[in-house]
Length: 321
Length: 257
Image (cartoon, chains in turn red, cyan):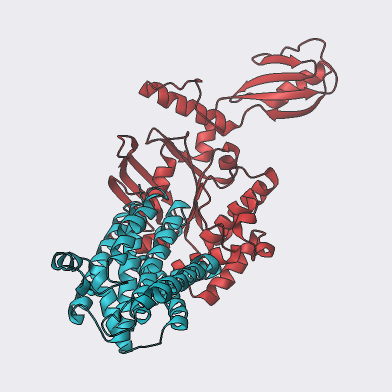
């Protein structure tokens, strides 16, 4: 499989002296679903901006499906569909017109553009709104409009910069389904940045974490999650607890009269815990992982990165929304 | 992007630009027509009737070419400066920058939109003018050629202004403090023969004088300057501004970090 995106030694220094990217190397394979995570100001949007020709790089090389962005920028750009973080369409134009115009900018004849626009607007639940001015759409609809617009020229690489920010859970779930279909059935390579770490965990196969302009982790999601050696579960009991049960090698804490917290390290079995609770006459009616697994790892990695750089954050934790 | 794709991209921008000013015709087409009608009532009839003929024409007829060209200049400039700055301000420009379109296509598309508005308003103003003055077109080719070239020059000027502009104030400074004075002093209302020698020489530095006089030649057959020189100057301005605009878009001046 070829590389959908290859970034080598990418640096970006802004006029105010800020080094947003410090020699970033990154490879995204064709047909991958790739998460690019990082705290605010880490360099994610700058990296995406350079790849999609919205930001001038200071040094380095970017190639999209083998097309060098400096030597053959038009071929590279033709392969990319971008869903930016902020709404950037003309809010006074009708929905359908926005998508058709975008197709026009890519040289697609109007008749074909109309067909493509209809296909994507329908798939994203916006066809009924096609004649409405974009300013009248809700936040979630505007996000979906940007996805439809990004897909109208059939890009081989779709870059989504926080596509579900501010979107309610129902629409977010439908967008996940849509993106998964796009990746699995059409082979579109997807690069996703998000602050919702469960989104990355649910959708992506590979992950890179960027912090202070440097890639601090780049691996498969499975491998990354496999490194998590400690998880905390919250258990809800049917009846109020009278005595805190004891289980060998497990730390159990009581949060309130019907809620327990248990720390499990890698290899420890939940079954053993349930057996012990059953023997104590306690019935568990539900349980949940206290914190998203990826979130836990993300915070640890970024904290380690900060400590290495001597740049502890005010609250001690990275900013995760 | 092959030639056909480039043509589709260019046409997309042009249609978008024309629809934009057509949708808001009350703001874009009507005001110049009203202003021109007022010029004709006040300067043409009330004051002009008290003046002698100018270069063999009644004053009301003499000012027709200048007023039409004034509309073409201001409207072609205004269209591109406001449209491109708005596109940049609302970040719609990103739609074009992420596409395979070349800078030449982007510049050509916006400029054509500006020329379309300049010529459309010029047409409306001509209709208003001929309600007050006698219709005359001595040399149609010259009139159309210089009007088109002038619209191109000022559409390009508007584009470069918008590229540099950071605030809405920045897009009104040039029209207010540069364009309007140069247009009024560019022979819209008078022949430079009326000026003292020194001011005649100063006027010859103003490129708008050449454009207005060439257009006056196209309509009335009279001019203060050499026609060839007027076309050469306008063409050179158009070429220079086009190259500057394309280079600026290529480098991302004012539109990329």
